[in-house]
Length: 178
Ligand code: PRP
Image 1 (cartoon, rainbow, N blue to C red):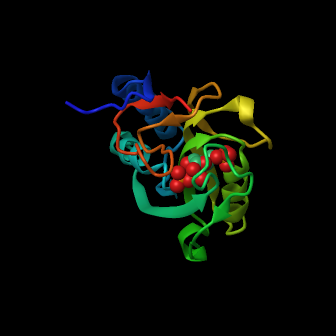
Image 2: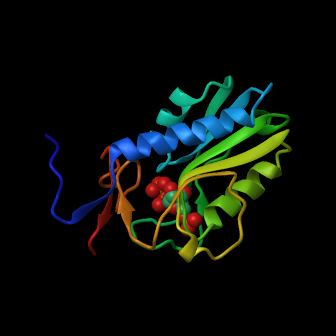
């Protein structure tokens, strides 16, 4: 059995996450008739959600790419200045139907940055998908097409989310006592 450190308190169990992921997959499929998606995961936090979501999506996926962004660094609050740590070739995005996948929208700055960056590469369409949304923390208005669960302003880890790169591997989501 998995060891869960005392500083963690269960917030969303693996079964609830799986249900949420399947609901998002259904919505994406409904909106994607006749297209083939280019999926772009925002690293690192999205890796587990992306892997599960793609296994549920029935829409053809033409390509899977990743974009590395960082806003928290080793802090427990967003820096307010998300950095793009790598680049995508224009050809990956231009004329493609893009689905961006991220684990959480907090201040919205990462989402805004990613949207602007990809929009500048002239995709045929651009949709964003996030498992978790922390609306209380929003600093900028961003449009997110698919949101799994709205959450309060707790520091959450597990299922890809980390504190200082720890706990990403946990299959459930936990709040961490600070
Ligand atoms: C987290 C998360 C989102 C972003 C959301 O990434 O994965 O990409 O922060 O925060 P924002 O809405 O305030 O911009 P983080 O920078 O922690 O990097 P990571 O994915 O590598 O953990």
